[in-house]
Length: 182
Image (tube, rainbow, N blue to C red; front, side, top):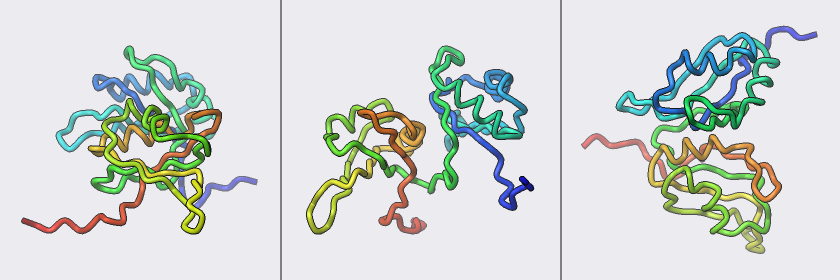
């Protein structure tokens, strides 16, 4: 039996690589054959311009699964990336760092930078290492010069890197402090 879950979580996909000219209607049209769309959310920068990412909420999981099949297809001349939206995908304000899990153990810095080269300038990579042995534990934190880099990187979650599916999510920034008013 499947009652409505109390969380009221609608099946949704994350879309990345959108044209900055894309409208809600364009996105609805792109996914129209997948199933009933409840809502389209296009992410905007603080100046109101589109940032090339968004979410599409479907009435049911069948619609979401159909939408995932459209990843890599062309919308307004751009190759669109479609991923299942991760729960808790809310972006912390000012977040420029992402957590990358599921990395191959033989990956090096050059290869990791290559994976995220399209996202923006990388300012720092912190490798997850065992405190005792110093062994690499298969994850890293990647910091970008700007928030848009982190947004673009999260869109790559689920991509295959050296034969392994990586998981990318916003990192909780331990150094984040309340912004003091000047």
